[in-house]
Amino acid sequence: MPSVRLALALAVAAQGAFACGGDDHSHARRAYPSTKLRPPTRPLEWGDFNVMHTTDTHGWLLGHQKESWPEPNYSGDLGDFASFVAHMKKIAEEKDVDLLLVDSGDLHDGTGISDGFPAGGVDAHDSNEFLKQIPYDIMAIGNHELYIYENTLDMYNNFAPDLNGRYLSSNVNITVFGENNETINVPVGERFAKFTTRKGRRVTSFGVLFDFTGNDDNTTVQTVADMVKEDWFVDAIQEEPDVFLLVGHMPVREDNWPLVFDAIRTVHPTTPILIFGGHTHIRDCVQLDGRSMALESGRYMETLGWMSANLNDRHKKNITFSRRYLDPNRVTYQFHTLTSNHTFDTEEGANITQGLLDLAEQYDLDYLYGTAPMDYTIDRVPYPSNNSLLSLFVSEATPLVLSANNTANSTRPALFLTNSGSQRFDLYKGPFTKNDQLTASPFVDAWLYMPEVEYGVAKQVLDIINADGSNNRRRSMDDQAWERASFGLGRDTSVDKRYRAWLRDMEARAHAEQDRDMRRDADHHHHHHHHDELSIGYVTYDSCPGVGDDTEHEPLESYTLPDFIQSNVTVNGTAFDGIADETLVDFVFVDFIDDQIVETLNSIVGEEQFSVNDLTSYSPVLTNELLGFYAQMAWN
Ligand SMILES: *[C@@H]1O[C@H](CO)[C@@H](O)[C@H](O)[C@H]1NC(C)=O
Ligand SMILES: *[C@@H]1O[C@H](CO)[C@@H](O)[C@H](O)[C@H]1NC(C)=O
Ligand SMILES: *[C@@H]1O[C@H](CO)[C@@H](O)[C@H](O)[C@H]1NC(C)=O
Ligand SMILES: *[C@@H]1O[C@H](CO)[C@@H](O)[C@H](O)[C@H]1NC(C)=O
Ligand SMILES: *[C@@H]1O[C@H](CO)[C@@H](O)[C@H](O)[C@H]1NC(C)=O
Ligand SMILES: *[C@@H]1O[C@H](CO)[C@@H](O)[C@H](O)[C@H]1NC(C)=O
Ligand SMILES: *[C@@H]1O[C@H](CO)[C@@H](O)[C@H](O)[C@H]1NC(C)=O
Ligand SMILES: *[C@@H]1O[C@H](CO)[C@@H](O)[C@H](O)[C@H]1NC(C)=O
Ligand SMILES: *[C@@H]1O[C@H](CO)[C@@H](O)[C@H](O)[C@H]1NC(C)=O
Ligand SMILES: *[C@@H]1O[C@H](CO)[C@@H](O)[C@H](O)[C@H]1NC(C)=O
Ligand SMILES: *[C@@H]1O[C@H](CO)[C@@H](O)[C@H](O)[C@H]1NC(C)=O
Ligand SMILES: CC(=O)N[C@H]1CO[C@H](CO)[C@@H](O)[C@@H]1O
Ligand SMILES: [Zn+2]
Ligand SMILES: [Zn+2]
Image (cartoon, protein in one colour):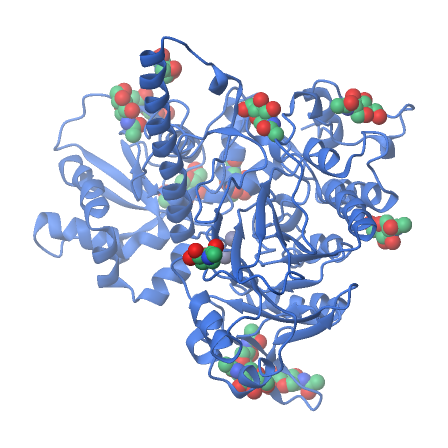
């Protein structure tokens, strides 16, 4: 299998590709889709205190590299970001104002650059080296730093120390061996930080994680309610700073920021409080009072958050804030720094890009399985449908791959069932590489099967488990077991649900707006095709004043998905019509729902006819390898 270099593949795929002369591969880099990108609508509003915010980056440090929209809008990589930060810092100096940079956690689990490490490695250990080169003022811990003890330990040993007291884990501890090999329980980073800005402002900062319970053994998450009662916290907030900077992995709405906020407000009724949250992967903004603002800045390097405040206006009752959600790409970055394509890249930025490309090469992330003929998305198309990644996975790829590589040696008709959370990210037209496989389909589950189930019985299971999924599941597992099993490596089903509800909300509002426009147009006998030119992307309706999005978009489409999905009956890997209810089939499903399936089968036949002891392996192929095998078989 020839391995196409990542940079080369992308350069070929993109129009207006950039090569700076010579064929030395170290000069190759991913292409800029810049010519096609819409610039932001307006300059940023600077205050005397300004903060840039990233969150839930999940390894997307190489940016979004696909040519299908809206991916190019998020095509800036971490090197571009570093250049942007450097220019912005210079602008802040010229304006003689403060500019800080903060991150709200979830550095692990998301792409090949974090998850594609060789055997024996640790997730995100290498990619985090590049984040260390960005001049963050505060970084906070996320739940994805805590699913696997080795990852937390790596943050404790190799990441936090390099941030010089600015990696915060106010309510998160790790258990490690101390100097005399005794067991000690200590914060992963620091619980809080107090520092002074370039302009001499005193800042008190915390890094708070939501009440997460899926953490690994030997890590501890204290509830936010308990944390604010701790002596150390009460002590830390006694002294009044110029501003409280709360950075943490907790959504700005429907979660516990008000507990932290209220604890501070009780002592300091008017001190400015700036909150930077995360975890639900949405763009959002809330004001808890007129002297505070809380911002959440999306996910996967699809959003760079901006907040400015005028803290010098001391006589004013309310603080003047602004907030903005930037699409991270070179056009956005150059627009806001008044740089050109030629003056934009800093040496450090270009070096980071090259370092990431080298790491991608070292991990062999451009290893090519095949070429996808079209886009397959998770929720931007209905399920089932031709462009649905879930349909591709459960109805096409799974039957074909598992029948070709089949432990059971079975030629019986088969029915395949899995959960809709089985896929993490959309699969776009073009090269399907190791990086794409790690990004789209990382969860490691095995396929089990119950042999010789009457089709008439098997076919009833799907609707039942979709109808009462959560009740049924609790019968067999306690909440924590379910959370562990179903979340696994980044399977944040609750995050996905919240994210998709957000997309559906923006779509519904946009449709309502379009209907209003159409009625108005009809009334006034004129048309404006303003919307036609807009690109698809996020359209944010938050609770803060004014418009938040930096670039105008049409909303992405989003459809509701069932919890579980199932193929039609297949024989030898392909769909088979008109099967009779009495026919005996192999009922094949992923292992982590085995109890639930067996219980449901028994409830259908009304007796304990099926047992988990009857289950055996259907194929050695694991779910995270399946699309690669499929691409090799079907897309070459
Ligand atoms: C950016 O610069 C490179 C060469 O420096 C060029 O090939 C590319 O077309 C430029 N992009 C834009 C949008 O000007
Ligand atoms: C420390 O203790 C653990 C178990 O408590 C043991 O496995 C390990 O070998 C000890 N290490 C040293 C250096 O004594
Ligand atoms: C975290 O570690 C600190 C320092 O060892 C300890 O005092 C505190 O009790 C720990 N907190 C939790 C919730 O384990
Ligand atoms: C967790 O702590 C227990 C008790 O100290 C110890 O036996 C075990 O090895 C630790 N596990 C890890 C992953 O460090
Ligand atoms: C100050 O902010 C609060 C909270 O956002 C708002 O309810 C109030 O109307 C504002 N007051 C003024 C004078 O703008
Ligand atoms: C360039 O990046 C490498 C790591 O990729 C780093 O070790 C080195 O210090 C960087 N050099 C500069 C000048 O930033
Ligand atoms: C979906 O795929 C089927 C089979 O490949 C094809 O017959 C059908 O036309 C496709 N439908 C659409 C809407 O593309
Ligand atoms: C399936 O076939 C292979 C090779 O033909 C054989 O080694 C294996 O034992 C068979 N498995 C079962 C479950 O019969
Ligand atoms: C099952 O087959 C029907 C008819 O071909 C098709 O419309 C449907 O989408 C298929 N369902 C799944 C889940 O593959
Ligand atoms: C499935 O494959 C087996 C073995 O290769 C063959 O005997 C059988 O006829 C095939 N069934 C169908 C419906 O193609
Ligand atoms: C079947 O899948 C296993 C697990 O990925 C793999 O090691 C093996 O090479 C595959 N066999 C064939 C014939 O593809
Ligand atoms: C910044 C921006 O909006 N860029 C592009 C986003 O995607 C659309 C297509 O959907 C392009 O037209 C925009 O230019
Ligand atoms: Zn996240
Ligand atoms: Zn999270």
